[in-house]
Image 1 (spheres, one colour):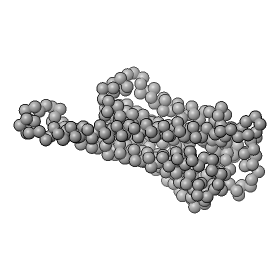
Image 2: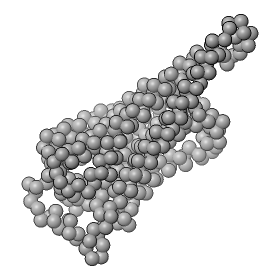
Image 3: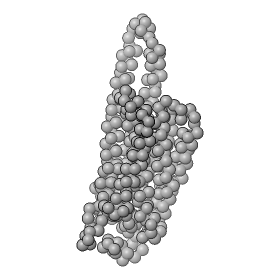
Image 4: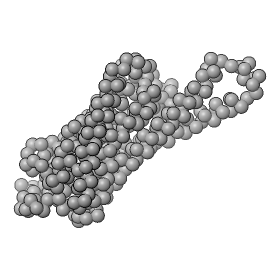
Length: 330
């Protein structure tokens, strides 16, 4: 048994939950309950709408639909498997079950696995739109080749749970109970002489969140730039003399206003996705990297919990954002 675990077991139950204030715990419990209910309804509705709508399934650019369904599935699992326990945990300010149970080891796998899968599905969807808008000539090779989309979906699910297998099987770090945060989470490994080694938590967050964040930033920057260039091109085309325009008119030019409207709508949708991603995930990524080793309670713990609450809300916001942009599911 580790020194850390022995110290935890030596404390009284009344000392659970010293990491954050009771007021923040109430906010977290209320938020988790709200997200569990509304997120389940929203993501089930999204999956049913995409699964039953034949017109959506048969659209030419179907890979986007597959990535949206992967995102909704991960968010649904998060709302069903993780949020109820979060509500109990913060409501009681202690872990609701036995601290050395199997579920205590599986809970962080479900927590970090579902959130990271959601993020990687969002990255896959972002790359899909990037290729479609910025490099349309590549689209056939990347998404029309047999097996490419299932392979990308498999990667989105394999990487998070592959990373969590490291502490689960104690290859790097371990999974267990942290009484200070009254949570089952990723803990440092224990060396043969009883010392703590480095925790893989920072590495997991860098690979699972920081790198995807950079990929999304770069892709959306390129998407917005490409849409602006296309808009300027169409504006120059519309400014030509009417006679010259009518003489050179083609079926493609007749559809230009509709295409411009689609691009404006796509720009607004992608801007909303990017803004919500930054709001939900950036604070927690920063908090986990900077505050992971903070032993003091109080404001640092409150900031960490508030950042976590923002991340939880992505499971609710994602289905509504994609519902607004549903006519761009491809």
